[in-house]
Length: 252
Length: 261
Image (cartoon, rainbow over all chains, first blue to last red; front, side, top):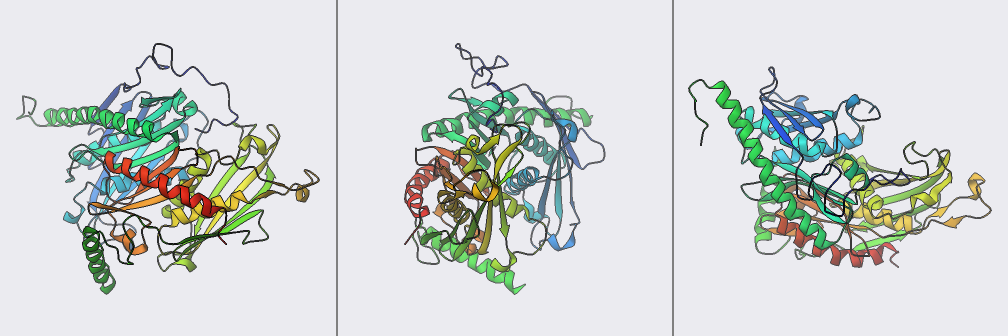
């Protein structure tokens, strides 16, 4: 998106179906997740996904600030997605811009859809997502990191929430766009899924797709989420294998 | 406290009704409230419209002014969309800096206009890298009875359709010409009430909703924008169903955006 009047369009897809970085259309970028990456937070996770580096921390359930946001019969989920000034090519002005505020809103709502918030009335579960290095798909990387961080914090949830962006490049539906593909592609569709129910708790889209392409994109995204889900579970298993001296074998 | 209790009872009632395929105001699950668009409602603007969906009302004013292009798009004009959820429109809204809800409305409406290439931004360029038209789309919600996004989107399309480039005012030409419109995106919003997905939620239905989904389609059969909001979830098949319904409603609403008598 945002390529109106911009520079030359690079070759996004070769004749034999390879993408800029050699991936196939349905291939994810390398994804590495570390659960429990920070010491002070109640739960945390660090995600490296392609050239994205994203840290997430969870605090709470704790007292609500400001107080008037408190809800009597459940916890509220307050999410802050933030991009570091140095995370993009041209320095991003620090502070909350409208894009970050919108992303914070939809990610917070996605988690509120899976957290058993009624177990912690009058509290706040604060989710902080910090994008340290960005290369397209940061909101999805943020969801993945924050979801693992929530689990690490012991927050009861229906399920983990894997997320991925599907897009359209050179007329083809492709999984997990990287920066050039996002900049010069024809559509971007970030989504987050609850694997247990197969339902989407985050869904956005910008660009153009026919209804058939959209349908194909949803299927591809679901497939991507299922694979990311496994990596998320592995990260949590690794974390607790590492901290619990009694566990010598990987939990089944 | 009593407010919370009434809200709770109402929510239960709305969900009970939805299970029987009914709604509080008597509409069917796939029925919109009456939509009207009055173009040219504000004569001081370069394009404007008052759009209503039921009792929800949004005024859109377009202003075109010369300005500087963004450094990364020297040949393109600038489109800026802003939505104000005015405190006069609902007891839910308070004065102050834009609430994330207002930011979401402006960004979702903006996304559809931009992605559908509603206006050809390259045609707004005056001198590459130096001077271009900036198109301000300002949306003022004046009465909030639910479904602000669709009403705002309808107002924006109505206003853009009838907008003029004020060449004379800025010494950029001898005559004012109509702003060229390439595509006509329309946003349609749905809400989940239990297993039923209704279109065009009212305020009470929004409060009861277990997820909201907005889909924008254009006149050539493209989906150009989507946004899931609120707490809740949709299956991929729900999304496919909503997209089909969106195309149907969009077709009718595009005609309304031209202006209703």
